[in-house]
Amino acid sequence: MLVFILFLALLSITLVFYLIIRREEKEKIEFFHVTAHKFRSPIAIIKWYLELLSKESVGNLNNKQKEYFAEMYNASEKLNEKIDSIIVLLQLQSNKLTLKREKVNVKDLLTQIIQKLQFKIERHKLHLQETYPKEEVIIQADSRLLNIVFQNILENAIKYTPENGNIDIKVNLIEKKLLIEIEDSGYGIPKERKSKILADSVNSKNMGFSLYFVKLILKKMKAHINFRSEENKGTTFSISMPI
Amino acid sequence: MDNKKILIVEDEEAVQKAVSEAFVNQEFTIFTANDGEKGLSVSLKEHPDIILLDILMPKMDGMIMLQKLRLDEWGKTVPVIILTNVSPNSSSVINSVLQTAPAYYFVKSDVKLEGIVSKVKEVLKIED
Image (cartoon, rainbow over all chains, first blue to last red; front, top):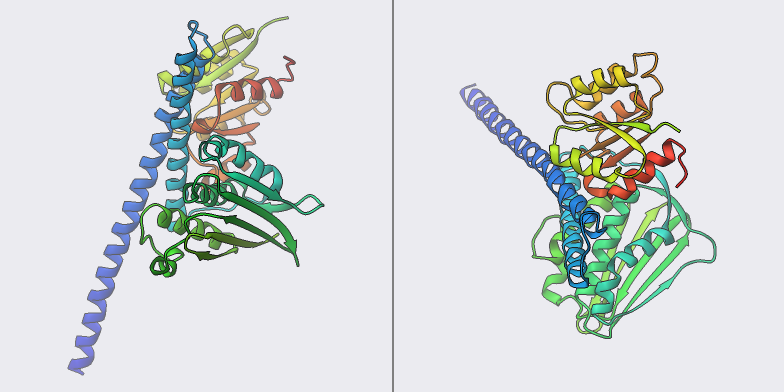
């Protein structure tokens, strides 16, 4: 009897501690969530005033000034994307993310992302090739989340491929599934890191975080990601998702 | 032709100023309010052609203001563009949006000023 009471008491204490920790965790996530949203206002203000200045609405600019304002604008866009990623990540972790279902033209979406990354592709002197099926690929998905997924994978491919390398994007529709492969001729993923690259937690810097994030989003979308990689030959990420 | 009237309801002065600036030389008359309470009273008094509305504001937030506005005979149909920091993918925001039918929803940091101007023109059917 005494053992049973002791067991019950221990169980209750453990439960109370668990609930306290969970509540603290929830409050922490909520705090970061609210704070991340608050970053958006100053970012919008910086972007909008740069836009007004770049349009010469308060005075003419010389070419150098235009170039510098454009760099500042791009940097604030980048900052905005990062904040956006943090907000989505916190929403995913607290189960507060509602998926939108909208018509997405996959080719249009990828073209927009490639345009955004064009200056990086040119800076790295990379050759990009895209292959799409003959018919238009239109799926029902959350375009904002898809955008984050493809942009992260492409940015990784650009970052980890040496000059004059290749990046191939292949889009296919097979048995009511969308298959996208992004293949690069880059450095590849070292053997010892392969098992960690798509793990369920953030366990390595840079690429580790973005792929952890990508995996969380794809899981929410009931999609899958895999990769194959060989050192100094390149990496291919394959995504399959229901349409 | 009379200038179209725009009401900007926004508590941050720098945001209010930048958005107002975007409509300079565009033949619009701008009204501003820095909380939902004032936004509602200016709306009902001036009957703007369109309202740009923030959500998180002191005194009365944008969603409450919009719900109250929709109870008014004129306010029922006035086009409202939400201009906010809040992502449109949480269930509370989605429910409020479904109830109050804004014409459009922008996250501030994702849109350019020229994007706001062209959306206002599109909603008011003004050709460039």
